[in-house]
Length: 303
Image 1 (cartoon, rainbow, N blue to C red):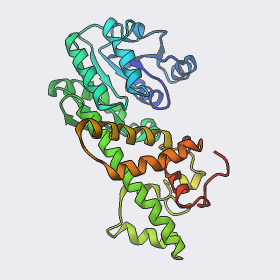
Image 2: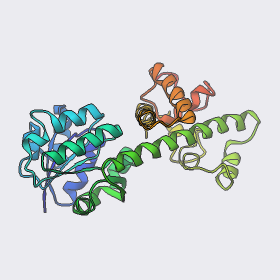
Image 3: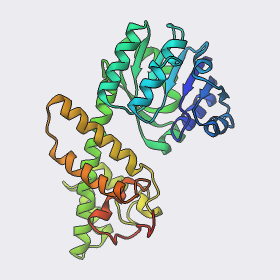
Image 4: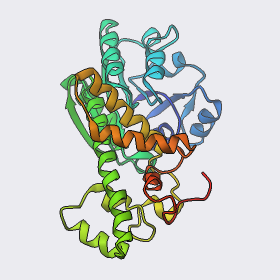
């Protein structure tokens, strides 16, 4: 099997590396948080103390980082990936970052002689644990095919979205659409209840009618309606408000750079911002229902 360098062992990175270890790969893992490295070591990851150690001798390097500035620092810093890896090593950034940063990383990696893929994922921590993530890849055809066998132990779906930064573009646009759809679901759920409709009866109607959507079927924000909803569990995060706030913000920033007006995304971003301002960014993103009904069933009394 192969040697994989991994940088970023947080909520997503740890279960993703665990699946690579189960597939028989050697994974050299690094994180700036020592406890994250220790936790990953319990899953069979080989702990290392620096980026240089993580990339040494690696066939492929993955990064899973919070924001664009972190990705730029990890790849472009004096002690970063480009300064330490061998140019034969394929680089894959699975962070969700802004479109412009992704393009910058492609450009700088190419100038340094590296093959680079932007490969953000969808599916959350549950998908990372189950190895069913959706990977959206941006890069050269041959590089994507080289990366595919390494990605498969972590993935349920693998899509080659296009050239440089296409993976990030697909992820950003998809999550923006999800957030807009969710706003419609929470508003509909509250209005249906105020009209006196039974939540399950209304859900069953909408699910087979024109009001159907993925967040309706999967995240219905009223307890007891659909098993996979965070509303059944005090809105503990499956997809945290902080992450959706970040992703919609990335869409708005990208839209500004492309000269596109996104009125619905702007509205949803403002609704998410309200939760952040109240210190509720750690709740599931479906807690956005609080802005429509502060007494919505299942909402915790404290964040």
